[in-house]
Image 1 (cartoon, rainbow, N blue to C red):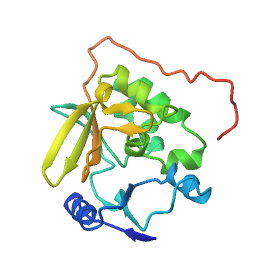
Image 2: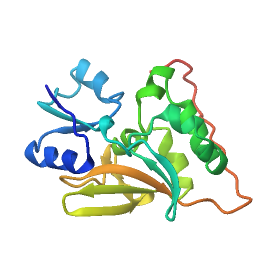
Image 3: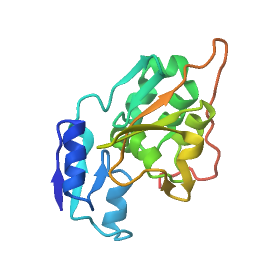
Image 4: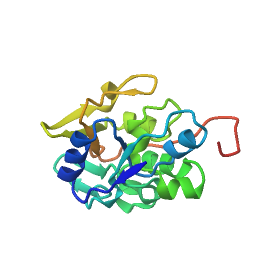
Length: 188
């Protein structure tokens, strides 16, 4: 396996075009177990996004609260910005797996995998979040409620990658909570 380490978003997109079968990754918390168990074949090339400055930034912007695709669950759950404006998202991020998974797993991967078992999408959906996708052709914003096309099928086109999640700032006086419901107590 060739691990490609872009330093900029433009470089990542260039690597994707030069290696069309490459898998895009950050925390690899979903990918490594699948590769290890042979559930999916190990790819020839992986474009690892974690070295790109800005992809882990969380900030309030004119569009709302933007969370970079490489922001980890641990960073999201401890962010004052997220805890203040999006408490359900902070609680969802805090509920993800074990500490090792929370420290490595990212919001971009949690959303891009389109797993029905993912913890963050329900909290993002109630906050009317959108997914920012970038490609050599530009960028597009897809509302989260239109992003999941089916089981493990996100609306990510060829040459696109998730760069951020954009969430409108909730109205003053609104509140949210996240409660994980299930009978399983152990980590999977």
